[in-house]
Every structure is written in C-alpha cells, then in structure tokens.
Length: 266
Image (tube, rainbow, N blue to C red):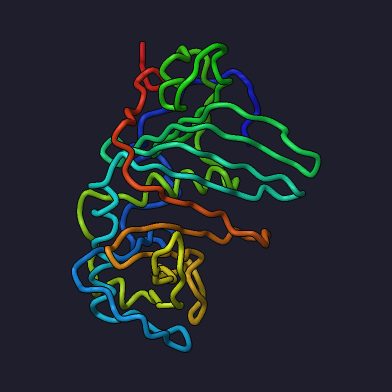
C-alpha cells in the first residue's frame, strides 16, 4: 500500500517511452486476457469432466469480451488483494474504459482489524491516494472531486498486488476485439462451469503470452463469464502468494461520473 507522502497527482496514461506493466493486446501478455463476448448461443447445462482447449466459438466470444466491457462503461468493480503477512486490501469503485480511469475507496485490514482507509484513483500510468474529505457523503467518485489536486499522493505502478490488480482492471476493456485465432493458439482453456449470483458461468484460463507461463502451465489469469458474454469475475495469481487477487465486476453504473479534479494540471 502506498505511504502517504507528498507526491504529484495521478499521471496521464504513459506514452510509448514509459514502462507499462500490462500491454493492451490479449496475446501480448497473459494478464491482458479477457473473457467471453456474445457471438454464439450459450451451451447447454451438461457438465464436462475436465479442462480442455477453448473451442472456436469460445475463442470468438473471448476475443469480443474486452469490447463488451468497454461498451458497458462506467462499470462497478471490487478488487480484493492479499499483500502478505496477513494484510489484505479491498477497493470498491467504478472504472470508465473510455477514459481508462477509475475511482474508489480502499480499506487495508490485518489480523487485528482495519489498518487504513481512504480514496484511490487510478489510470493506465499509476494511482493516487487521499483521505476521505470530512463531512462529504456520497460515492467515492463524488468525494474524489472534492479533494484538491495537491491532496493526492501518487505513484507509478509497482509489483505490489494492489497495483497489479488496479492496472489489470484498467487494461481489461478495449475499443476493439482481439484476434480469436491467436487466443486459441495461445493456450486459452475451458476449466469448468460455476454458478454465481444465480447464473451459470464458464471458467476460463486466459491465453499464455510468450514467456508469461512455461509450456503446459496455465495462465496466471482466470475468468468467469456468463451466457450473455458478461465478465463477472477475474482472478490473478501473484508469485509467492497463496491467495490470488480477485476482481468482481458489478455491471454498468449509470449514475457514475469519473472526477476531473485528481487529473487537473496547472
């Protein structure tokens, strides 16, 4: 978790010369894999006994999923990440894939309860933290608008599980589909079926980019997708941690409007 030291406000998405942890193409790096879109009718309820490669139809829907998420913006999200040593962090907020910006509340907990809480904003280049303004009610995106520019403590992304989870969230949506043939050839796999919130979801291991996972091993990312091609959940395994980071998607939030204040310049 970031230390509350004075720093610059959240930066704009990085240009070509600046390091980014997750490229936008699903096949460029496994952590940018996505989930089912909606080209093909959902299969029947019969269960399959073990994991297998994705079918052509599944790869086609997988390739459209990031576009579906982009078009659903702004989307409610919740991130849960283990920081190690019994410390965990949870972020609840919204992300707009048209601007690639997110805003929410974070809470850090340890073995004895709450350790820290506040507001967080993030984009493709980094994140910013600030205390919740006193006497201001409402959702986090509204509160973030009331925090002055100098009130944000920001940083570029690190290998911290929270940072990796936030960056994964903002990179999952895209304004165009991926190549379904490349997804199928890159090791995406069907893992099973699970019922979440009263709906059936297919569970997929994402594609493996070259060097992201040894041959024969799964991608570190897993996705839960319902019959309409809606991404409900994504998990990411982190090296050295037994508990994966989990992102839950709650669907479109028509009331949300991402704040401008944290990104203002001058």
